Picture 1: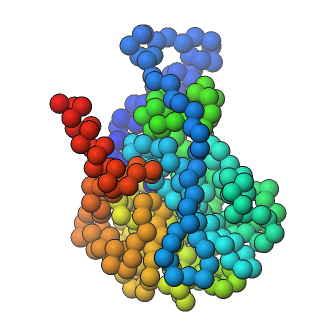
Picture 2: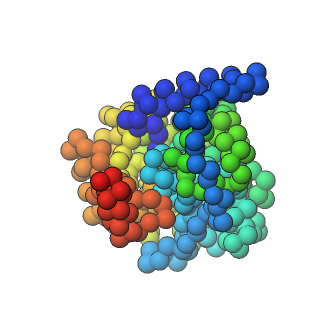
Picture 3: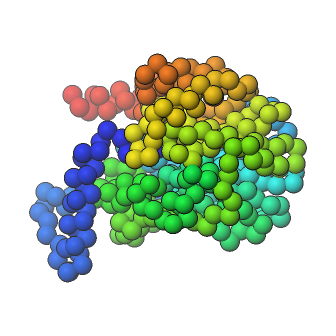
Length: 335
């Protein structure tokens, strides 16, 4: 995802952040008792949650990982990172924010042993999908890949196109964007203030490239609109599609600095032509063909809020049933 309609507020926060950093540099911090009351975040017992996706009907296994402590205010909320285990190669699709190493997590979980080649792929340049690619740089037999038009911002550490600047503003009030911390508060705030997205890129993917994992091959689909180099990965035989942030059941973002609404509409028309059993999106839940078509039709009809309220407010670790309870409790508190 990327910056949303909270843009003006974030600009103000970013300016405040620059002022605070300047004050720290000269050893002076000025604050009142009213300002400096940010709640300390508890230390997370577990940062990642990984589960095998059932009922895909494929001969290969697919595991989905989420960093499940983001709140709904966090633009990386409910981002999905997938590990596909093939017979001759494994394939990672998106890699998270890298506060803790996704590569280490998957190795400790016994899902990644380095004996097979690994395709580590970012579906696009944004922080919630590409930052964690760096954690795979030292994994043996790994090729790190991105869509050709999005590769340079990640390779060069462009803090603007990757929206690392967005994450830096989160350092002003981490408790607004996470309900737990990966490490002690001071260290977490420092990591946020200095956040960047940069990784080695071994291959720049273009439409029609094919990645073979043994029992299946995935064709690279260029899906521009959200970003110029957004890509999907499609298994023609088993009808499985990784969509990245091109389509998911939530608020679709076409207002990034390099978004293109005309290209996004063409992508939606193209996605409607693809025959599939399951679409694995960059955020929220798996979609079937009907679900993907409804998201596409929603966007083509001029809407960007392309999901029920239960999806657009769903936190990564919640079910829709939990969400209803939480919203009711929050409504009572406001009264």
